[in-house]
Image (cartoon, rainbow, N blue to C red; front, top):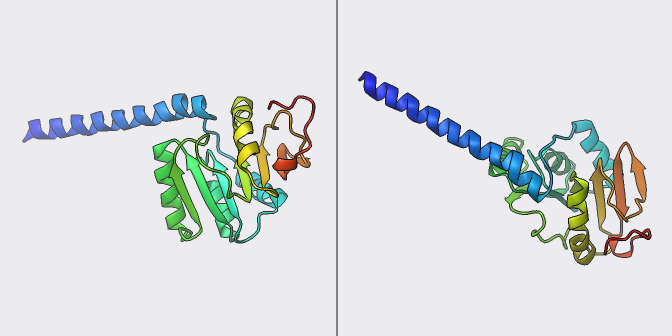
Length: 188
């Protein structure tokens, strides 16, 4: 009986190590290479981002690189339809659990995927907390897909070449990207 206990303990330990290594691979290698490393945003900043963007009930808010879903939950709690795109399968699972736990599944969802491949054309508001290189790579996609009147909120980093309509507390608001006022450093 002791040998079975030892084998079970080693199996559980090995499974835990494998899960940890997969999580760390996504968190430290894949996510930064694709868009940004995980960095949580404080609730106060999320609420301020929603206010600055003017997110209204019924609007579609996309969070590209949604992490643990905090912005989705905050937007859905205000009546917006919120969709997150996240590459890390553990964060997708955790976000879905948090959304269900709060009873917001009818308004919020998370898709596992690459933020550079997910269609953005239906979005009224897009939330971004990405490093400058990822913002530069995302520029052509947003420019070509977004509908007139769409709003982009970028936290911490401005989008090179775009003139924000508003900047407050390292929150940058860009409105109507199709007709955005661009500086001479327009990357397109």
